[in-house]
Image (tube, rainbow, N blue to C red; front, side, top):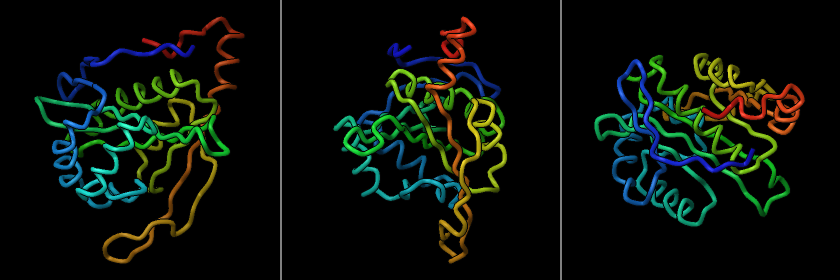
Length: 197
């Protein structure tokens, strides 16, 4: 099932037509503007603060190096969401990928996050990864429900894992998905293309 998807893709959502495309170095400024507009709390579950220019520069270098792939959700020329697949083929876990996703508050609950998470999940499948993880603060109930709908299950709770700008700590929940196991089950039931659309 390691078929490569083509981008851009266009999806209809309750927030209007959304273009989902691969992030390129030319998007650095638009993604920085997106990061700066996010509520600070939304940045906590990302390992780095994407509202910082130096973080964006490093991110673009990682994309150019091929270590990460990022998809952008674009509405009327403006970035409204980002889904990233991070993997390290030189680590002890080359079969594992981490999904990082964040969506602008104004398009939440309108299908943008769902479309973006499905596309990021499809990228992971195309990369042949066997296991995926995603993490977020425990109060992000909609995001947790969204990933659970894709088959992710809670695997760990990291207490006081992140500290916000006011010094308050927050717990992080880690969700995991055993892609290889689900693929085997789908093939056993004759549904190898079920997650492609």
